Length: 279
Ligand code: AMP
Image 1: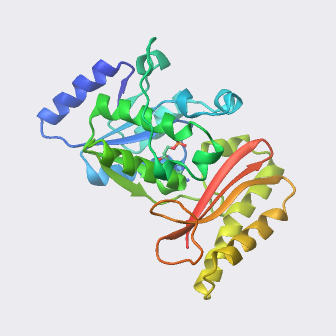
Image 2: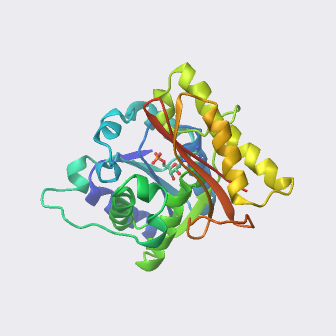
Image 3: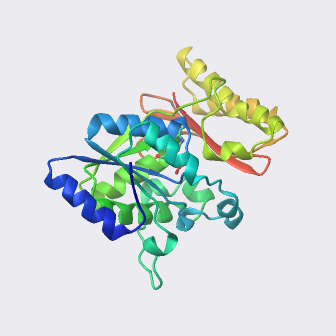
């Protein structure tokens, strides 16, 4: 696996790969990798001959400076994991390579970026869209793979890639969970054993709602109440939002239909977690 730190070097390397007829997939990450990230690499390999992962903890998408400071990092372990799944190249740029002094350009996505995460994390999606625009221009991939774990992020990316004609095909990867249901997240390492136990209520409440839909319940208000009730049993869980929304625009629906999804954001102790499930 090639490791690059300079943007100009990976741009040049990708150009040589392309000249040899290779196709390029990009898997963006913030590192501290887990099976969810590795499943994205596996999926990327099915769509392109060269798979590039980047690790960049993007300050522009952290609305909470403490969250940025506490974000876990382990480049050595990440490198070994990426090599083990056959990643072609890893790009780990320093901050100054992506945001050099004097940097002032940002990408603001309207509509789908406004509710839910957009409302609770001001500037978050602006940071996401900006950094991805930079990486898309540096690497110019044919396809890029993103997890449904961050479902709203996925929709925001699909939107701005289309609006700005980036010409990158966006591939959706299914959410990967632990055996007991906990959605894999780099932030899970911050949970104490007790908090981890409480965090299971997120996936459990979503499973309860999904089962209710399968049994015929269609009212979003009833489904939201079920989820909130299950989460309320855990004193360590502080809910930010529970939403039953359309996958298209992430706006709330009254009646669940094809393309409706439940989304949760909650603090478990001091750690903010999100989870989601198609209904
Ligand atoms: P992150 O490093 O958290 O920015 O995530 C990088 C990519 O991995 C994003 O596309 C996420 O949606 C995806 N991802 C993170 N956790 C999971 C998971 N449990 N299952 C599937 N994809 C995930």
